Length: 260
Image 1 (cartoon, rainbow, N blue to C red):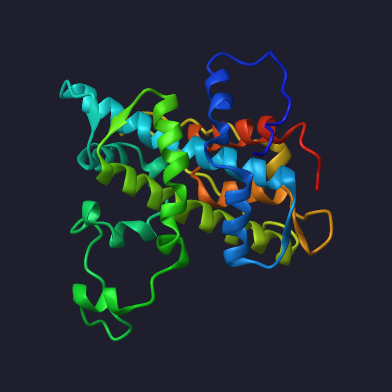
Image 2: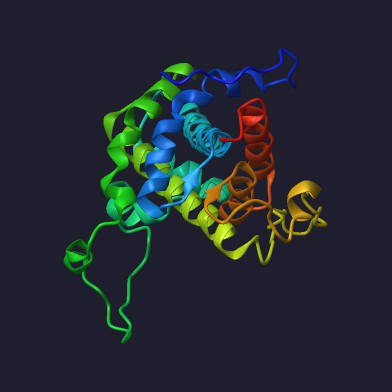
């Protein structure tokens, strides 16, 4: 069992729970996902950072679904709660490759057209080779269940399966983007999305200067480091509260982990 990195007892309010279940997704699982998409070496700090980000994203999905269920006075989460939570918060619309695969999202992803503009029937989609992230979704079940237990949330098996799939696709996409950052020597372009209410002035989201100031990376071209994962987070997540929290918690989780 991988030991959790040492950490300071002084944390911001609300941060302690993040560290209790940061190990929901083990660094060994993270490295296995990275091996599916790149032959590059993944540093220990990068693995801890990616595990932390995945936990933050899944936790946000669970919390959103729990709020929906609470409105109906239900304690057990169902797939409809997850769909409603995603509909209410664009920041958690991640791992979308899972949506076409899952019955939960069937009919919500729109019509698919081929290169000639012809509608692709549902049976045509199933004939294509499934992404490795979908095939490997079962690997995330133990971590998802640990996270649910840690947050004292009950969920039906179908919802657990959806959380497995979304977590798998999200982490796979994160790994691909981190590898791209290494190959290209940095992130070419940064973007952010400000969520505002109609008729109200837009307030720019707080941007992390240490990330946005990096137009190029340091280090060799064969190793994915922590900063490469953090840069990939800015690609995968919108420029809102979730992204800022994911970056902050990933830095803290990997702070005392040795580089390699």
